[in-house]
Each structure stands twice: as C-alpha cells, then as structure tokens.
Amino acid sequence: MKHNEGFLALVNDAKSRVKEIGIEEYKKMPREGHLLIDVREDNEWAAGRAAGAIHLGKGIIERDIETKVPDKSATLVLYCGGGFRSALVADALTKMGYQNPISLDGGWRAWNEAGLAVEK
Figure 1 (spheres, rainbow, N blue to C red):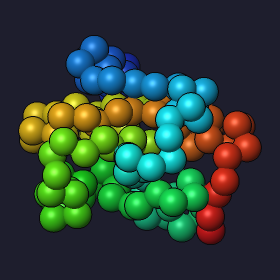
Figure 2 (cartoon, helix red, strand yellow):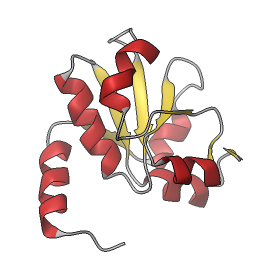
Figure 3 (cartoon, rainbow, N blue to C red):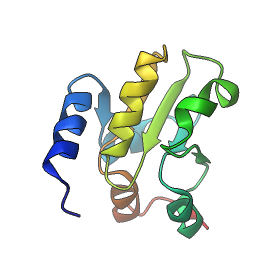
Figure 4 (cartoon, rainbow, N blue to C red):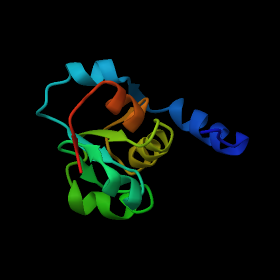
C-alpha cells in the first residue's frame, strides 16, 4: 500500500519514540508475559488474526485500554497490517503512561509470511 506523505511523517515521528521489534525478535519472546494486541479495523480482525491476540482497534484503544489492561507496566505487543498504525498506537499509549508498548514492525503481513498461527 502506498501511504500519503503526511501520514508517513506522523508515523516516522512516532517511530522515533517507540520501541519496535521485527517478527524474528517477536518469535524469540516467551509466549507468556505479554499481551498481543491487534489494532486493525473490525473487518480486518474478522478476516483473520494472530492466534491469541485480543482486539482493540486503533479507533477505540485509547478509550478502552485502561479498562482492558489496567496494569500500565504490562508488556503490550501491538500489531496492525504493516507496523504503521501500531507505531502510532504505541506512541499514544506511552503518552497515557504505559511503560512497555512495543510495535511489531511488519505487522499482520510479517506474521503471515513467518507462518505463525492464525485464527478466524
């Protein structure tokens, strides 16, 4: 997907402040000890998602995260389609006091290319 210049500037600004990991680094993380959060749109989630993920779309995550994940020290691995929206969400969550949001670079695309488990 080709992204607009203004959107890319916003994403690059967020990426300058947030932690990002690639799919290979994610695969080395222990399965326990973090929450995997899908920040994609409802229709994207319905079409398929990473096994074990919870859904808090980018449009509502700031509103609902404190109810769903009150522990601001929790490790949150966020993914979207390619790692752009998840970087924006990680930046917003940091501003809300979350200490360990991580954006998964490559997102859903990288997840599938790596052959990791999915659910429908």
